Every structure is written in structure tokens, then in C-alpha cells.
Image 1 (tube, rainbow, N blue to C red):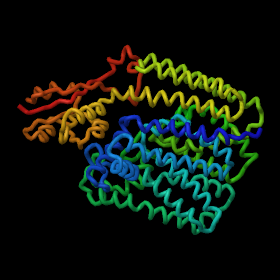
Image 2: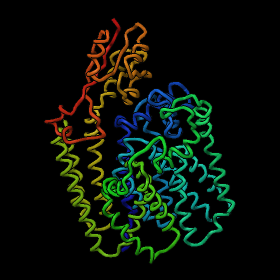
Image 3: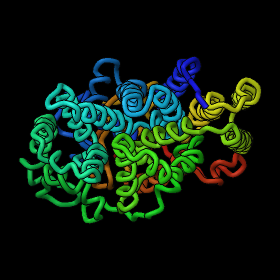
Image 4: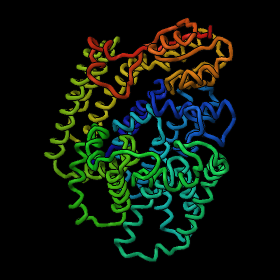
Length: 549
């Protein structure tokens, strides 16, 4: 069945891009995004582009590039959530462009159109454009690198080699040396499978590696200057920590083998169940598509299939075997899922199969709609009528406008589900949740109410307070460190209310300026979500003026 998305593609693309863009106008969520924003803020204020400072001390975890890009944005547009998220969103758009180019080159223009629509409406892609980490940058750089390496395979030398090195270096300076695995895996699998062993001796690939090393020299220089030249610095609770050693081994391989300073408890099935929600509304169709891959292997055993699927399989297996696992790691693999799903859908030749898939997507839409209704009234969303409008508009459009059973209708139905859900999340639910992010609320209140050179976080660590407060912030983890910062003057503290009584007992005169309700909003539970029991789940933080009597 020949199906073209040409007429509908511009509208679905625009709708998907605008939907993702709504995340630009949502406040920054703790912990990771707020931490990264605070690190970039420190760079912008101090003009120190070499040393990363997080948690009030030298910070060694992620490479510099995302912080540099955010700091440049702060310099151009001022320090704000929008300015922090803008570079990542622009990189995400670059990734969408390269996803289209890569898929159109390897498969077809129609597959590229459908793959892009699938990708930009996937749940975790939308989430990652709100809760900005490194993945929005990383996905774009990986896709660009794969595209240019693929193009370079057809020439003894071409400018694609230089572009590939550039994007590989950017990816490394975003996440670490391990990102070369998902970039190179598909090519290596194909060369081994087809016994093209001479490819490994091709001078252009060794030149590519040399260019990558040259491209990542700024990161190596900064790590050397911040850590290797200063063995006296305490990092991960010890001194003599090498930034270069951490970069080349501990940050990635140390996590994988669980023998580095940052460790976790891996579950081999973690990314399997993560995928089921992360790739909604497409995950169930993708499972069908993956189950059909062995059939496709027999019918279409070629290098284009191996380049895409090799990266996917290798990345997914490595992530699953790793002992350090977080849900957002899967984001860089979602473009590969989108390509596989689009290729499967366009290979369908029977109307009955398409009809069943349309019914599946309509059923999923109904489940999402009822889940939203349940959440609206259980949580107590204030503008509930707006939420109802989103549900009704998305459902009626899906039911009556896209009621056919062709692939275009399938793509549009699924897009309606994503649009309905994420308009609700980004314009209604997340803003409501963020009123319980005490650090952000306190920082904004302090900016509007008074001028303080340096407020102090006392026995707490709120990245959102550090970012949203206009000035830099001091930290005091004990009464002794607070006394050292006091210096016989009035100080302003942000602290849990339970710390006020001990401070009074220690001789401080306290004036509470404002109270703020707090909940860890990235770890929701039913006690908090239920408006009738929410107060029992909340903690109280305060801003207070303190002076030693």
C-alpha cells in the first residue's frame, strides 16, 4: 500500500516542534536541571570558563560543553529558565534535521517524514525538552556524527570526515568518551559481518580519530587545569583526583563496571520497562516492529539496516548491562526506535493490519485521556476547565478528523495523544507542581522582596534556590560553618523550619520572613497527588533573617 505523508507532514512537524517548545516556558525542575543551570550561572557571573563549580565546590561529573552553551545563552539573554533551555532546544532541532537527513539517505523520504513525527511526539523526548540535561545535546551530536560518517564511507576523502569529527568531539565534550560506542557500533558490526576487515586499516578512519582528539582538546585542557594541576583539591571525598583519568575511565567505564566513584545498582530489565513508557504513544507498535526484525533480516540483509539497528542494539544492550542506570539515558536511542518503527509501518501491505494498529492507538488515546481526567480531579488542578478542553479537543480531533485507517491517520491520532497530554503537563500540571519547589519559590520571593548580597543555605541543598536567587549563594552545613559566615552581621538563611529552634538555642535571634511548602516533585506518590492528603506529605522551608545575640 503506497502511502505518502507529504501533505500532512509540514503541519504535524510544526505541531510537534511547537509542542516541544512549550517546555521553554516551564520553570526548571530539581535536581539535575537546576544543578546544571546553577553551574552555568556561576560561569556566567564569574567569567570562569575553566572551573566547574557545583554544590559550592569543584565539580567533576559531566564535561563542560553543555554548561558553556548555557552560560553563553545567559550572557546573551540574561539568566532565566528560558535562556538555560534555549541552547538545548536549538540542538534538539538540529537533531531532528539530522534524523530526517539520515533516514532519507538510508531509507526513503517517506520513512524520514514518518520517523521524525514519531520521534518528536515520543513522551521522553517531550520530557527531555522540559527537564533539560545533556541528552538533548547528545542526541543531536550523535545523529549528526552518524550521518557524516555514513556519507564519508563513499569517498576516500570528503568534508564529511571533518564534520563527523566535529560532532563526535562535541558529543564527547557533552557526555564523555563512551559516546563513541553508539556512534561507531553500527559501522563496526556491518564491517565485521560482511568481512570488510580492510575498513579498519583505512587511513581516513585513523585520521577521523586524530581529528576527534584534536576537537576535544578544550575539555582535556580544562580538566587538567582544574584538577590534575591541583592534587590538593578534595573530590569525591579524597585528594589526588585526576580529571583526565576520570574523563577517560571513571565517568563512563567506571559506572558501567561499577568500580568508579559514582556507583549504582543495575537491573538488566530496567530499560525494557523504561522504554514502554518513554516511547509512548509509539512503544507498543515499536515492540511489534522489533519482533519483525528477524523477518526483515532474512529479506533485507543490507548495510543500511545494520548501521541503524547495530547502534540501537549495541546501545540498548550496553545500557541494560550497566550497573548505573537512569531513565533519561534511553533518550539517545529513541531516534533509532523511531526509524525502525517508521520503516515497519511503511512496509505494511494489508489494510487489516493498519486497521488494528489504528484501533490500538485509539485505545491508548482513551487510556491517556481517562488517566488525565483522574489526575485533574484527584490532584485538584486549579484551571481544570482548560485541562478538560485539551482532553475534549484532542479526543474529538482524533475520533472525527483522523478517523481513517491509513498511516497518515495513525500518525495524526498518535500526535493528538501526545499534544493532548503534553499541553496539559506543560501548561497546567507542571506549573502547579512547581509551587512546591521551595527553593525556586524562595529565590523568586527574595529577589522581589529585598536585596541580599549572599543568602546562605543552612543544612539543606536546593539547586533551584541557588539558580533562581539573583546573587551567588553560600552554604553552611553545620552550626560551626554558619558561625564562620556570620561575622557579627545580620544574615539571611534558607533552611528547613526544623532548624530554627536549634538556632535559637544556639543564641541566634530569628525573624522568619516567609514560609514555603516543599515536596520532591520528581518523586511523586499518591499521598502527595491526592489533594485531600497532600498537606501530610509536605515539608516547610523558611527564609529567615538571623543575628547572633
